Image 1 (tube, one colour):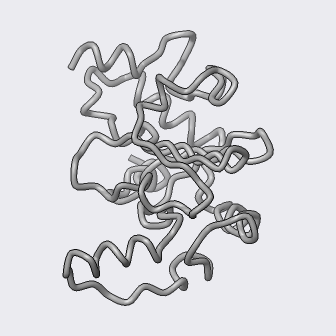
Image 2 (cartoon, one colour; image 1 turned 45 degrees about the vertical axis):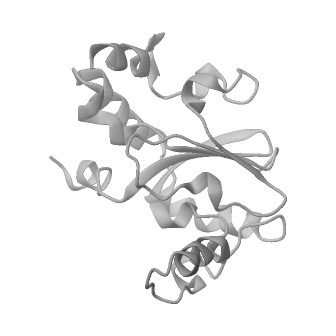
Amino acid sequence: MSKENNDLLVDDNIIVAIKYKNIITWYQADREIWIMDRYKWNKDFIDKNIAYSEDNADDRFGILVINDKNKKKFIEHLCPFMLCDKKLEVIKNKIKKSSSWWDVHDLFPIAFIDFDSKKLSACYPYPGNIPLERYIPDDWSGEFIDFMRKLDENTLPKNKKYWVINNIDYLEKLSSLS
């Protein structure tokens, strides 16, 4: 396997969609980058008496809370994590060749961050993962929902769903086989 293909499958890297100015772009980066409000996340550790390292913004472009004032800066810094057409093609080929959703579940997105509507929708297969939908800015809404299937066509058009290949919805196909 080429280095580029290996880079797509780093364990803590997850795929997320960002909708900004009505344009949907796919990214793959470490799960913690997608925690929109790090103060709320840290408060959970404190409230549960769990030891944690003091959070700083160095690992996320100097931003502890992603909001209207810094969303453009955040998105600009995400450029190295964008899934270009070539990387999406590699992902699509892996999905097409798979016989089980569990073999490729990490190639499906776990969050849809809609900056236009100030809404984060998340869906992930394992309990115990960071509940991204809980750590959002105060003026946002967050929900745990199967956004890949449930978001309407205006929010997430079919032609933006990279797992729909040649009019076959591989999420549906592989889920029905599992």
